[in-house]
Image 1 (cartoon, rainbow, N blue to C red):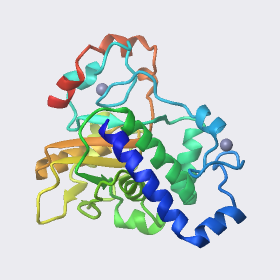
Image 2 (image 1 turned 60 degrees about the vertical axis):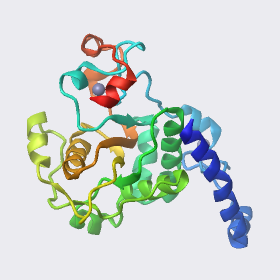
Image 3 (image 1 turned 180 degrees about the vertical axis):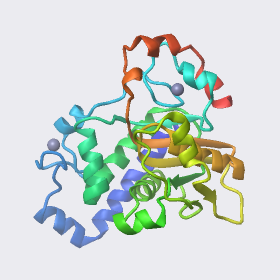
Image 4 (image 1 turned 120 degrees about the horizontal axis):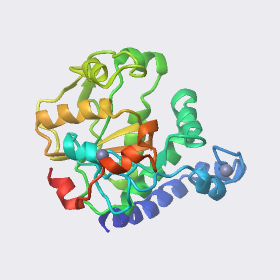
Length: 276
Ligand SMILES: [Zn+2]
Ligand SMILES: [Zn+2]
């Protein structure tokens, strides 16, 4: 698998880089990496094996939107068939519930970069499990400059930069921008969410975007933000956009086992998903 090769190729290089700094090795000896969730000594990615095994994983899910499917035989949900989103795939390792939400919140609101690196590694592991073309560029979902000023950093940018470094994919920084500081999406209807996001992003580059783009964010909740970003990238000339997120929030009516979820799903091959 191409991604596995990338992942394998990048790991020794990264180790070599880290080991070549004597101070980094010395720091690891003095302060061995600890698990960001339980504080116990861990491997280099700052999560111990028991905590990693306890993280809530997404089960059988739609290849396009990462919401649960009614049957493991299905690949695409009925909602994506009826109304195909402007992105082809969603790569996502975790379900946004405890303790994955703790990991995301420590990173996002407490600026715990080690938690962000754990999330990046989990995204890379999910990417390596899938069989599709490597994107030409990674682009983070942008924050409005006001939000960036108050929060101090863009968590999506940090994820994109670190993930791109591991997988050796160029980072498209500053090419997709947010021109409107939208209000919070929670509590809004689907129609209101779309209206709220309309015109919020724009392509800020004289050239066209890369042909195949991975758009990165920390959490995908309703999907309205990444849908609007993907639409802008496609309109600017990208041929394919995939979404890479660390965690997916699952609405109550789409939880696995929900009868509506199973009646809405249909079988489609992964190739059909990529073409549509
Ligand atoms: Zn732990
Ligand atoms: Zn779907």
